Length: 167
Figure 1 (cartoon, helix red, strand yellow):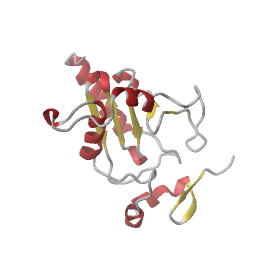
Figure 2: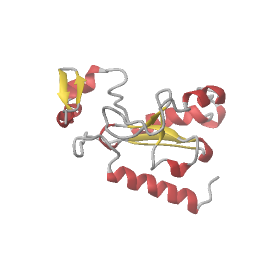
Figure 3: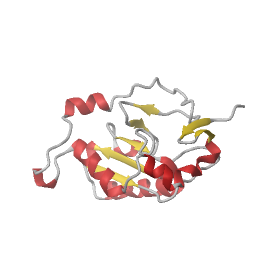
């Protein structure tokens, strides 16, 4: 069994050494596609602007429905195992499109899991954009995955939506 590796600003490192993501030098590096370090409010607002107008129509939706359909249609073969993560994952043009926890929110839900338990998603059918970010990176069994806390939050939101009969 080989060691899973990834690159960071120091070179290759084992996934078990992912505490590097907590290093302030890494935060300052601004590496596109790797360290999207932000806060939950900002990234949730970005995702909200992908599915609807904001601020009572003052800020128009960023992408129209045709572009969003293309951007959220999976490009990943069914049940393909991600070589880095070691489990099945479905991606479209930069968005994750299949996650057991997100299926609750309906078809068309898209988002992205972040390192250490962070997550952002938009559920157009529910007019919902949500983000949860963590302050420290965590690794569970050398595998990036949604943390139990994040799963509990997502399930609670789903129950609230169901209880209030939101779309």
